[in-house]
Image 1 (cartoon, helix red, strand yellow):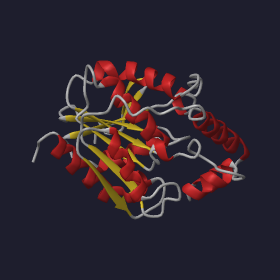
Image 2 (cartoon, helix red, strand yellow):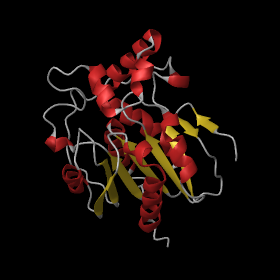
Image 3 (cartoon, rainbow, N blue to C red):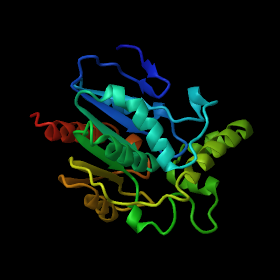
Length: 251
């Protein structure tokens, strides 16, 4: 297997496939980073190449400044993607990453429309009672442990705990003043993904994203919780591959 490749500061390719027909740009959840999509990259077929987005302020981009809001982050990522969307491409975002992916897709559409968009585990903005993240008296730690069973071990280490919480806080703060407008709409197929045990959004609620595109929309529910892309594994990868191929008119 070809070694992972860093394209620019913004994009990491876990499984380089230079002959792939579709580039799938993947946006991580709050506090997440590009390696979250390494397993998905390995599970997808050879005609799809994952380009995982390296968010600022973490991992290899620890010293890069955080964006001040969603719109600034969308502008940064869109500018970074433009040189690389000359062929067939799609976007996939999980949780907060779905919000960024959706808005990047809209930003790029006038000049380089995507073939498809996959949105995972995020309540549609018109249903928000507040920004994504902890609600009421729930703190960030209890929120994280409720959506990710593996995070408790990381949070048990003081240095790692402070680092993780600072990144998560910065990501969640991006959404504090987010004001959603449905126009302009996407004009491509959109697939919603959700875990059956996700405490933040249900399959029925995910159908609200249908109003964001003039193209076809569907939702798939998988076993698992909030981080459905990782939880559902190979089953989800097959669903995404079939969706991307159908969107491109490939049997």
